Structures are given as C-alpha cells and as structure tokens.
Image (cartoon, rainbow, N blue to C red; front, side, top):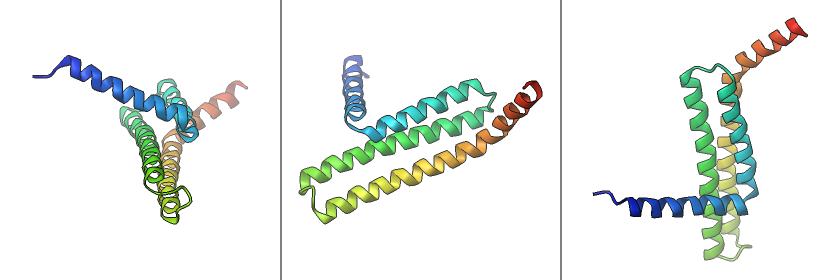
Length: 128
C-alpha cells in the first residue's frame, strides 16, 4: 500500500535538494533560465508534439546532469582535499559531461526551432 504521508515526505526532501542546488550552484541557475526560455518557446511556437517532447527531454537531461555534477563535486570535496589532482580531474570530467550535453541540447534545439524562426523572420519582412 502506498502511504501518502511517506510520498509527501519524500517529495519534501526532493524539493529541498532542488532548492539547495538552485541556491548554491550558479551553473544550475543559468541552466534553469535557459530551460525556462525553452519552455516559453515550446508554448509560443506551433511545434509538433514530438518536437516538444524532444526539447523537454533535453531540458531535463541538462538539469539532471547539472545536479549530478553538483553531487560529484560535494562527494569529491568530502573525500579528498580540494587541491587533490583526482578531485580536480573528477570535477573537470563532470563539467565536461555537462558541457557536451548542453551543447548537444542547444544544437538539437536549434535544428528543431530553425524552421519556425525562419517563418517568423519571413513574416517580419512581410509586415515590416
């Protein structure tokens, strides 16, 4: 049997974790602003459902990876001194993973949104 009390307690912990990342991680806040822009675009443009789904999955992937990056940073700092070469390497690798995902997401978003933006630009030329 599912306990609503346990569910809401778990939800509270999860939201507290997200709040901590938002509060302490500048990169997450930057990614969150980008995510909000994508969400606005999704609702403003007449995108196909599959395009909306792809963009939402990309947004989620980048944000989740940013949280995982923050987790690795904290764990690394807790296990070894900050100046350890291994900790530096782990942090750099995780930052690289976030960068790859973010750039790929931006490229795919551009590929999806380009035709719509071209249409808007054409309309602007007609009425401008």
